[in-house]
Structure formats: structure tokens, C-alpha cells
Image (cartoon, rainbow, N blue to C red):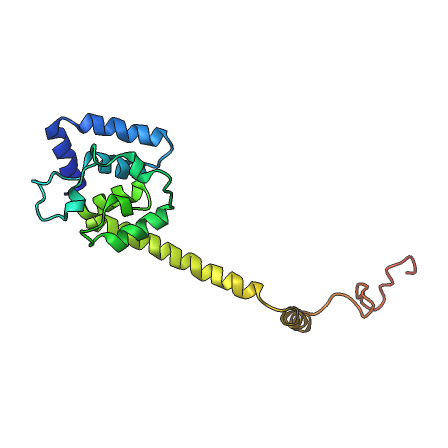
Length: 184
């Protein structure tokens, strides 16, 4: 079910304003807009069983009395870890909320099953950024692992390539005739 279909369903059921209020509460608690949307979507259920009979049972599970916040008590993970878990479980119909690393991951899994295209687009963006960052970090690590000998060779190479403005004694190299003192 797409987000517009989900909104239409909530409007038909008379729960859309309640959904918007819950999403605003989550944002006020410090969640980003997307996190708040995913969590609220998981709490309101992304689809009713009759509306999407082909969806796996776990995608249709709407949190109710049988799924309390206690399931997620003490569980924390990063957004990246949540996305990885969802990516690993999107096609696993046996996956349950108790296996989720966080409430947000469980909501994201439900959302991803209702709108896989949006999930995969965002997942690929995240993976691409991570791979770019990993490449830069590997270059930093390679540079940081250089030995003192390698650094000395690099500095010596620079001094032979770049002419020095200093004479042999470390003083500025002045052209002939410029005594630099009062001896004109």
C-alpha cells in the first residue's frame, strides 16, 4: 500500500487526524519527520489484512494489545543498523517484532513492505554515502600508517624539488651586493 493509499484508508476509517497527532507527538519527542512517520505508521498498521491479502502476515500485524512497547524496551540501534536489518528481513515472512533491533526498525519493515520502491531508493542512497565515506576513511588510514622513514623520504623529495630561499647556514640567501646591514 502506498503512502497515499495508507492516508486514504486512515481517512476512510476516521483515524487520519489521530495519526497526524501521533506523528507530531513523536517529532516533539525528538524523532525526525521520517522516523516519526515510520513509527506512527507501525502503530496504526500499514494495511488491514483484507486490503492486502498477498502481504506476509508480519507486514499486516498492527500493534495492538498483543504488541506493546515492552517488546522494544531496552533495544537501541542506529538508523543505519535499522535499515540494514530491514534490508535483511524484507522478504522474510517469518520475521516478528521481537526480532527487530528497535521499534523504528519494526515500523520501517512494515513501511518497506507496503512501499518497497521508496525503501530501496533510500537504502541505495545510504549505502552509496557509506561506501564513499569508507573510501575516504581508508585513504586517511593509509596515510596515517606511514612510517617515519617514509615521511622523511617525502620531506627530502620536497626539499630537492622546491628550491630553498635559505643559504647553507639557514639564513636568507641574499643576492650579491645586498649586505642586509648598514654596510651599503
